[in-house]
Structure formats: C-alpha cells, structure tokens
Length: 113
Ligand code: HEC
View 1 (cartoon, rainbow, N blue to C red):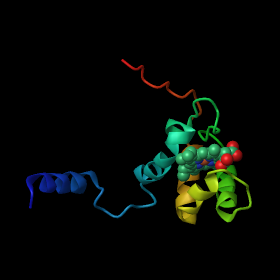
View 2 (view 1 turned 45 degrees about the vertical axis):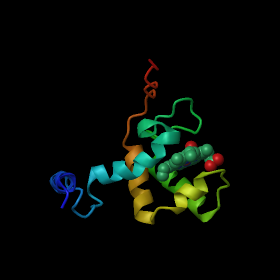
View 3 (view 1 turned 180 degrees about the vertical axis):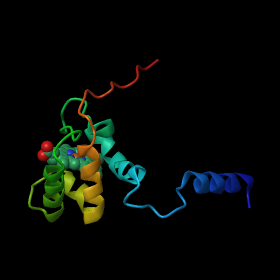
View 4 (view 1 turned 60 degrees about the vertical axis):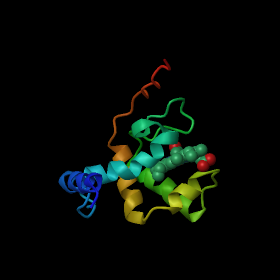
C-alpha cells in the first residue's frame, strides 16, 4: 500500500470517520449541514439574509419547510432539489443542528490580499 494511503487510513480511523456515522454524533449533523453553508452562510448565518439565515430558527419550522420542499408542496428555485437528497432522519438532524446555533452576524469573507 502507498505510504500516503496508509497515513490517510490511520487518520480516518483515529478521527472516528471510519466508524459508522451515528445519529447521536454532533459532528455527523454538522457535516450534513455543512452542504448548506455555501448559500445560507457558515453555520446558517446568512451574509445578506438571501437566502435566509437558518441559525436559531425553530426546529419544527425548518423541518416542515424541508419536507415541503422535498414533497414539492413549497415552490422553490433550488431547495426542492437539495431537500430531496436527504432521508427524513437526516433532515431532522440538519434542522436540529441549525436550531441549536445562536443566531448572529456572518463572519465577513477574508480580505483579498
Ligand atoms: C445553492 C444554494 C442553496 C443551498 C446549497 C441550500 N439552500 Fe436553502 N435556500 C436557498 C434558496 C435560494 C432559498 C429560497 C427558496 C428557493 O428559492 O429555493 C432557500 C430556502 C431555504 C429554507 C427556507 C427558509 C425559510 O425561512 O423559510 C430552508 C429551511 C432551507 N433553505 C434550508 C436549507 C438546508 C437545510 C440546506 C442544506 C441541506 C440548504 N438550504 C442548502 C438556497 C440554497
């Protein structure tokens, strides 16, 4: 085996990534939610409120929106496609993650040198 491959395997094993992702693992919830950060801001703190901040929103509200996007009940430009990619359990974890974040200003992007 290539040395880098062995090193990667060791890192993955020691960091717990090699273990099955557990619903109780907060890192698993954050890693699911991280796919939303590009548009909704890091940890769901939206930069200009477009799209809206998810941080600190009510969990039941978030979950309902995600299910309605997934079912096509709520019209959307992009969110129906995102919401369809997750199981009900994953949407629950994602909604719970954003609900647990204290709302606040998004960190501004680092200055370009
Ligand atoms: C490509 C950009 C993009 C990504 C990535 C994205 N969203 Fe969205 N989101 C939007 C837009 C745009 C809207 C407004 C509705 C629409 O037009 O689809 C929205 C709306 C929402 C709403 C409704 C908010 C409200 O206040 O009613 C929720 C909830 C939401 N997104 C959750 C998520 C979650 C959870 C993820 C990650 C799984 C995610 N979004 C990823 C762009 C994005």
